[in-house]
Length: 141
Image (tube, rainbow, N blue to C red; front, side, top):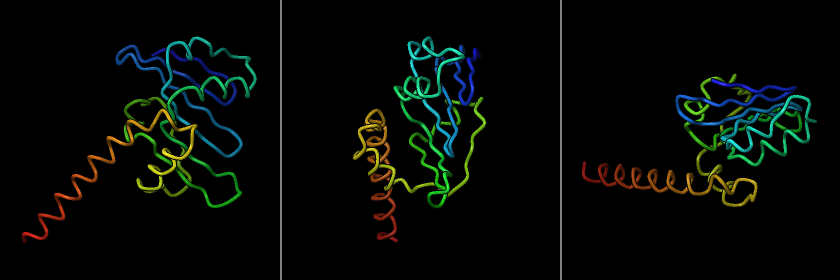
């Protein structure tokens, strides 16, 4: 694995999977992203926090934990495979995980989560089919 690091961020290229990922944190929040090679190449130590955040935010959001003392801490899992995609990350989880339904709604509403819509829609469709099947099985019992 190849890493790039700076203050409050770390990016990784995993040669075995060909996947680029990044984590960033600070100010009471922690984020994981799937990024592209182009994003990885633009990350350099010494960039301002603002520049790094803007660059990494171009990726697909995988995971977010917020504990900013403005309310209760919470965690949002945008992609259940975040641990597989980022096995190197030091995951921070300080609060309750949002339910799938709330995460699906947030992804549909917020433009910043547009890159997660296709993946979340497929997951929701599978979940709904499974729930329907379980309901039918219970009725047959």
